[in-house]
Image 1 (cartoon, rainbow, N blue to C red):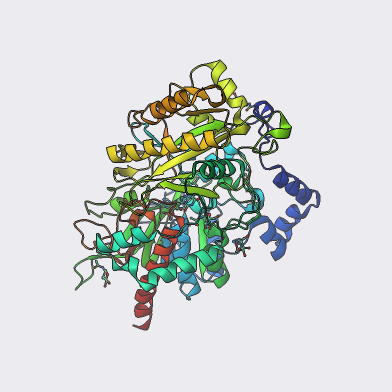
Image 2: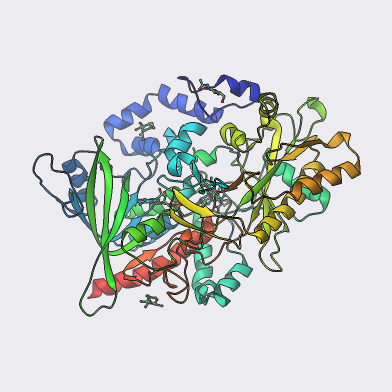
Length: 614
Ligand SMILES: Cc1cc2nc3c(=O)[nH]c(=O)nc-3n(C[C@H](O)[C@H](O)[C@H](O)COP(=O)(O)OP(=O)(O)OC[C@H]3O[C@@H](n4cnc5c(N)ncnc54)[C@H](O)[C@@H]3O)c2cc1C
Ligand SMILES: *[C@@H]1O[C@H](CO)[C@@H](O)[C@H](O)[C@H]1NC(C)=O
Ligand SMILES: *[C@@H]1O[C@H](CO)[C@@H](O)[C@H](O)[C@H]1NC(C)=O
Ligand SMILES: *[C@@H]1O[C@H](CO)[C@@H](O)[C@H](O)[C@H]1NC(C)=O
Ligand SMILES: *[C@@H]1O[C@H](CO)[C@@H](O)[C@H](O)[C@H]1NC(C)=O
Ligand SMILES: CC(=O)N[C@H]1CO[C@H](CO)[C@@H](O)[C@@H]1O
């Protein structure tokens, strides 16, 4: 993932990696040759600015400017702002902030959940301020370099792990949140999960007409569809292997167009074909003229007061922090409603810092643990190989095929789905076993023709999160069993698709040359590798889905928020991200979190309407 001044690495050639998407690089080069981008910054011509910065440009306000400029930018968007004058050099603090901004709703976090709710409220005519601790990466300004992207667009620079290092966790932290870097899978909440959440958790919402409408609304917004013109390497392998084995295999609905053949979307989508929240709901917010997005701003706490005649505290906005010229500064937002959507890893800490005491905050964290296996498909002799010699492991739609062969959708609902990851060289090397220098060199040389397929468990087990630096999670026995069943299938799928060599990520690094062994030896290998323990740190497990740490329920003993998304403890404080999931979901969560946020937005709208009419 490391590069030199010309943004290259000599090893790439040896491993068959082309670096950032060559088409994007060419596109950019033309762009700069035209001199367009420079002019745009000078002229502030709308069209050019939009081309350079992307569709959010009118609503982005950077507070790392002199205070009066930042305040003016916000006033131009219709917010009322007061600048607090302070004696020279006196630092801002919570009781003496630099700016006080007023709005109807403040949304903390611009990811899948936050983006949707902000868009809905602004479109309905309310003044909405979005705070995002991550930065903003303009569409034309993505590096698509693995190292830089991890630093700029992922939580903690891409390196979040549970306390025993048993789980390697990926989470987006940028304008758009997880939606800006996700792998495009857009799957609706499965029926059996809606039923479970309604019947076992007392949440009628999930069997309501409103929720069905919400699912349709968010899918329509993303242009979810299920056609693919040219399937990428990993997914072609998964599909063929399943067909050979007679396992079920489906096409995953995606938010991108059928010809969107791009393996770099995990680093941001260069042409806006992937409809993350920053290409959809946040655009609504900006177009409505009622909203502003503040990148680089981290919420410190929710402000609240006691009001006469109310038994609960009442939320009144947030205090947040940003950096200006290397110095931390503090501002305050005063709002009628406050929405927290920092994602399941960050929301619990913000609620606790704000004085909430509910015992469920930070508990019930589900991670959808993932265990992988791989198969190597040589590209010589070029004439007869499959997948075709020009197909590379890191190109093409990231997730287009999946198998539910061990998903148990029709039975307990708790099993594992089989899908494929995106692994660029850095991530590939992190999860690959290391037994010796010679061995890792050999594995890396095979990088571009090594397919990865994984099993993802709908975890019954759970952990706790205090902050992204303090996560504890132990794999439960039942989840380990489901992953083992998944790995058994994955190894068979890889072999059936024609892999020459197969293996798992277990640290012993055993491999099998499928073409040279008997049926008996193959069976023995699959059984041994898929029955190894997974909870003992010998195999790296990954997670890109975090859920449940502030779950929704029907009473405060077992949950943090009620069906409307409002916290039991504080009036006017809502949560609208994956942390409200009552249990793990079992499939990719983006559509579900967006639908929930859409429903929470309807509740918030009612409250705002009532306040307005008063
Ligand atoms: C690499 C990757 C691939 C994925 N692929 C898919 C996929 O294909 N399909 C799918 O359905 N799901 C996918 N997911 C998961 C999906 O993106 C997430 O589940 C979803 O985005 C979670 O939404 P959220 O609103 O809970 O939080 P996020 O989208 O994570 O948004 C939270 C935001 O809040 C910000 N924030 C946190 N704390 C603060 C604070 N104190 N102040 C201000 N801002 C703060 C964060 O920086 C972040 O931007 C993927 C995730 C990753 C990481
Ligand atoms: C290229 O990658 C290698 C192997 O990861 C690394 O050791 C080296 O530092 C990188 N080169 C540059 C110039 O960053
Ligand atoms: C583009 O990215 C660079 C490096 O991350 C950053 O310094 C610059 O401000 C960005 N430009 C725009 C227009 O966002
Ligand atoms: C993730 O990508 C999908 C498909 O590209 C997109 O529709 C969705 O908006 C993105 N994620 C989120 C969380 O919004
Ligand atoms: C929960 O939801 C109801 C509406 O169903 C709402 O009136 C109530 O104030 C919410 N909050 C709590 C803590 O019950
Ligand atoms: C941006 C984009 O390419 N979205 C596409 C998603 O799918 C819908 C439905 O097929 C297309 O109309 C969109 O163009």
